[in-house]
Length: 340
Ligand SMILES: O=C(O)CCC(=O)C(=O)O
Ligand SMILES: [Fe+2]
Image (cartoon, rainbow, N blue to C red; front, side):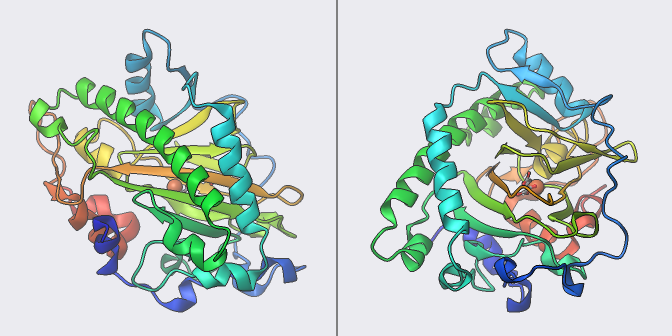
C-alpha cells in the first residue's frame, strides 16, 4: 500500500463531507453553498499592479529568481519548463472527459472516508461550514487504475496512461526545483538524498469548478496552504487568488507556463524564509474551470527540519507523516502548532 495513503488513513472524514452535489441539476446557488460574506468583488483585482513573477527555467539566473519568488510570494509562473504540449493537452482532455460524466458514474469512484484517492469534495471541506463549488479526483502515488476502473471498467487505460505520462513530467520538474531550492538553503547531501528516489510522496489532484450561477457568493476552493514542498499547477482560466499583505491577488494564467507554489514543508525547511501562501479559488459564471495540481513531498518517514543553523529554529522537527496528521486536525493552525 502507498504510504501517503496510509498517512491519510489515520484521519478519516465523514461521508457527508465527501459527496459533492450534482452541479448539473443546480440552476441556482443552494443555501449549503452560499457563503455569508460576498466572497469576491470585481473591484478588488490588484493583479494589474502586483503579480507573481514569471520565471524562465532556461534563464541562467533561474535559481536565484526562484529563491526570491519563494521569499516574496511563495509562488511564480514557470515558463520554458520543457513539458511537451501534447502531454498536457491529452491529460486535460481526460480530465474534462472525467468531470463531464453523469454524477452517478463519477460516484462509483467516491473516496472512502479513510482514503485520499478517488472522486469527491475537497479534503479541506470539514473545516468550513459551507460547501465549495467544486469537485475533485485524486491520484495518489502515480497510479489511477484502481479508481479509473470503477468508472470505466473497459475503457480506463487511456485515462491512466495519459495521467501517468503527465505525472512523469511533473516529477522531473519537481525534482529539479527541489534540488535548486535545497541548494540555496544549504541543506546537506545526506538530507537531499530523497530527491529523485522512488518513495517520494506525490499526488495529482484533478480539480473542476463548474459554471456558477452566483459566483460572488460561492467559493470554488476555500483558503488554505498546501502541505507540500512544491505544488505545480496547470490551469487555463482565471480563478486562483493568493493572499498577500491583506489582499487577495488574482493569479491569471500565463500562456504555456505552469504556476508553482511552495507549501508548508518548504516553509518549515527554510526556517520561515520562504512562504507557504494562503490561496483560494473563486468560480466563474460563464466559464468552467479545470486545473491539475501536482503535490510533491518527501517520503512519509522523512524528518523535515529547519535548515538555517545560524538562527534560532522557528519550528520543531516533524516527519511528513506526523505533519499530515497535524494538518488533518489543526488545519490553518498547523504551522503555529509546531512553532518553537
Ligand atoms: O485550482 C487551482 O487553481 C488551485 C488548486 C489548489 O489550490 C489545490 O488543489 O490545492
Ligand atoms: Fe492548494
